[in-house]
Image (cartoon, rainbow, N blue to C red; front, side):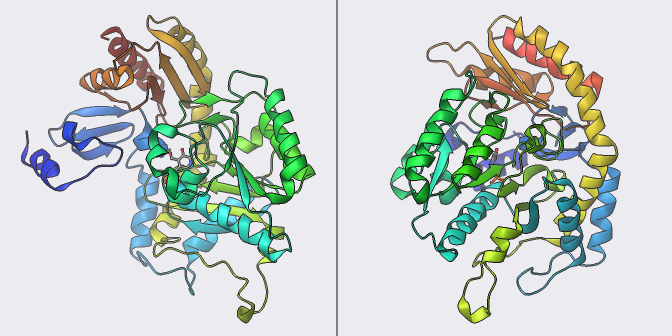
Length: 422
Ligand SMILES: Cc1ncc(COP(=O)(O)O)c(C=O)c1O
């Protein structure tokens, strides 16, 4: 064990980690799709540093954007002040998001982006004479982050059961995974018809529920939910924290169904995977409800110290341009190749199911009682030079969108070998 590994074990507490079994791998550097540890060993970043890396590591354009901003100001508050990168990124985002979204409210994590949407929706109904619209509808197995508001609309029991008594309860709706979604939409229609006057919003991940194990939705489901929300005057909050910024093959997943939600939550890829940044985008109608004299106290009381950090916004602006110029096209090419790769994966021994939306892939293993196959496979993959992180028995592929054809081959080979070892 190196000195740093020893120090890590003595001073740190890592997220989502049983520390009694913790064996630190210390990453000192990175380049392109690779992470490099303190001993100089290289690993393919198969999960894009927890689903946020878009253009690979140390991209010269992003590095330069960061350095240029660093020569101006690293941080200045957005409470009471503004700054060029925050303004320019917001304007650029509004050019590319679904048409109805006109306002950008920044924060610093996906969880915060979702909490803000919940609070804005809630307050909107209070401000507009519908004080009983207080409840939220969410999908079973949904994941929207780990802060209490986000957990309240989440449904992954394994992560959040213990916090049950602390949560604001939400209304669960079956996930349409492996169905045509018609029955779920019918159930939602009934719920909104009978109780819509007490419901503020439906909150959901579009096209695919990532943390649930890459559960894909049938085509038209998102559009169906949008139509019902419009019919019964209930907000639609779409959480694109995982799917946003090219991950599903289009800049935003909503585009694939022509959906324009009342709230769009983004984080992860917004800064290319460089710095903590998030945003909640909403419509002019929602924004306008909060307008009035300061003394009326209608404004939105929410903000974080690092809201709209200028370094993060500057790199976010460079990242968005790069996505449009080249990275999205590269992702689309890889997604095309992935269909033949995944056809092979489906035939591997021990693989039960393979699910994909663009560059979000879940490889589900046939479970064996008493074994954590996902974890075991990822340990093997690391020995073969590929970093993966499972969701239960599902191995996730979520590499940078700049992944090359050769790197995809390495990802496939290492995953295959790791599964063969089980
Ligand atoms: C769909 C979705 N929403 C929200 C979050 C939470 O984001 P963060 O970890 O930045 O708080 C995640 C994280 O994986 C996510 O996948």
